[in-house]
Image 1 (cartoon, rainbow, N blue to C red):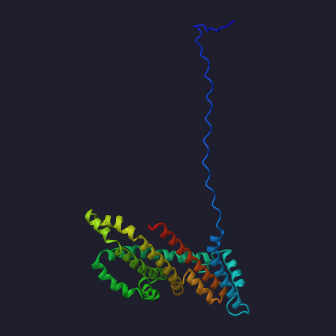
Image 2: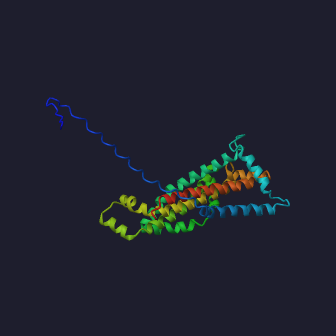
Image 3: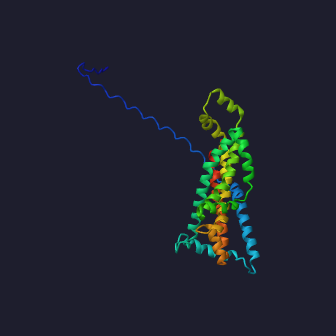
Amino acid sequence: MVSAVFHSPRDTSVAPAPPVPASPPLPRPPRAPRQPLDVSALLARALPPVLGLALLIGLWALLTFKGGPIPTPAATWDSAVQLFSDPFYRKGPNDVGIGWNVLNSLQRVALGFGLAAAVGIPLGFVIGRFEFANRMVSPLISLLKPVSPLAWLPIGLLVFKSADPAAIWTIFICSIWPMVVNTAVGVQRVPQDYLNVARVLNLSEWKLLTRILFPSVLPYMLTGVRLSVGTAWLVIVAAEMLTGGVGIGFWVWDEWNNLNVQHIIVAIFVIGIVGLLLESALVALARRFSFEE
């Protein structure tokens, strides 16, 4: 017997569709393998400076082993720990911590250096761009650039009648020459093809400066800035020794008058470290804006 099942035509219900199986999740992209630490490269970079510093301290300890006017590294370290335990104390107008002395010197350097950049960089562009200005100013630069920066200090004292402006003037006059010369050389080395294209496009002098000259001259300009800030930090110490007041140079001279040689050696290291930090910051800035691969 064959049995059949019939659905009533009134039964309009539809059987539910079978569930659609969910698609499997997409596989995650494999993580990039972590680069192993290159110990040999790290040692190759870090070991030579450490060995050089260790050699310096070793020779220093050897030379001061039997005593003498130069303090030992251990005595100098103890003085440094005592100084930097409170570097920003104030006990009077001229009796302040080493931190305030460094900050005051940096402030003078920043003012003198900033004025030199504001004058020297535009002057370098003018000298490099216009032959007449180059022939007019180049002899003056050649005459004044070899003059010792401290020779300008009495002129500053005569004109400004105060030690602070005289020190800033000295920083200004010693910082301006590297920026002027390097910027002018950079402008003169811009390829002539770039200038010909600007002439064909009938670019204004301002667009020529901002679109063509400035990007091309920037590496030269930053080199001049780096040389200038090193010279400025070098000169401020000597200038402050002569003018007095609050500053790292005056602090060194004051410690010499107190026959505190440990503090003088600490100041030498502080001056060197601050100069190294300024140099490193400007080198990093130059690399950041360099167009070379």
